[in-house]
Length: 396
Image (cartoon, rainbow, N blue to C red; front, side, top):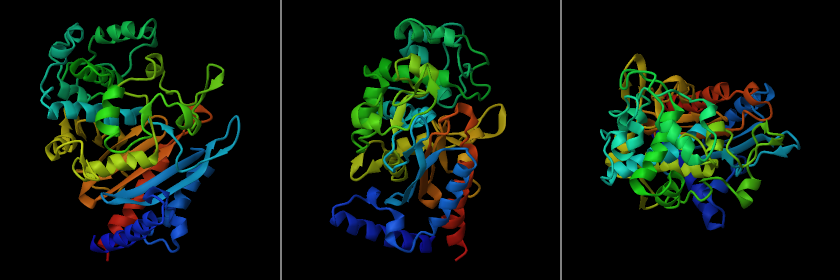
């Protein structure tokens, strides 16, 4: 570990010198630094192999620790249809389910820290309409852990009419399982949590997250419904409704809800997500700005056992050891690291034990929808990073 920190410190010194010359740390390309002091150069072949297999058209990767980013690179293409566009490090991606931890769960934890919510609060206390059909006792904690008994996805027939009418139908849904008894990953539960933020604070989840989290953290390219220059840099997803879906959320339910929902709708870049990951490694603070208390971060990231799943555990918003663990790879701490994935091909993983994180963004559903896949590249990249920066240093 000491050897790895010495290497990283040297690289950060080079990056700081770059700042003095007028470029930001995120603009420092490892290829331009000469010999790779991190030993991560071999990851390029791992990413390129996934591109060559046709699993993703391209990717952007950053690797870093609490102090900064020390590997950042773009690969392949942002788009292959209707035109071929090279991938760039500042490409904006549809986060899909990375919305859940990055925007929604973090916003909920901030409201809990401020005393406006409690983990054991019943959702119906704040959203009375939710208490229908036996849901009156479902708690904030149960929804954060996907233990509320709600269906993973409700019918698209519920998404007609006004947004208010759609939300009313969601609140009126019955449970599929006894609340608190099983773990079933659910988009519906996080749609409700997004509405909970508004019910408690008065601001919609997109506005709350922007004003209370993203702007203070300097995540200026993280937003719902990107426009202008951000929209122009977006990676497209599928060909839907006679056009390429670009700068509009891919998820059909979030799209029907107008692009803002607690489960999907966020857009971001690797650089902004790196700032979020660094904040989590720094226990709620980044560059002198605190957005969460140390206790809130500890509460949010402590693994919790999942009833009905003897081998599974999650935190309040993050995966640790569930179906998403492919993004953890084979080396990251299996008990205390955490992260999330998104259907569009997005992922990040944070390992406080080894002071390490990575962000890997792809648009795996471009151009052919579910024919692309991000599972293999996530697993292989995470494992490679762990072999080099965790196992490699432990062997010295």
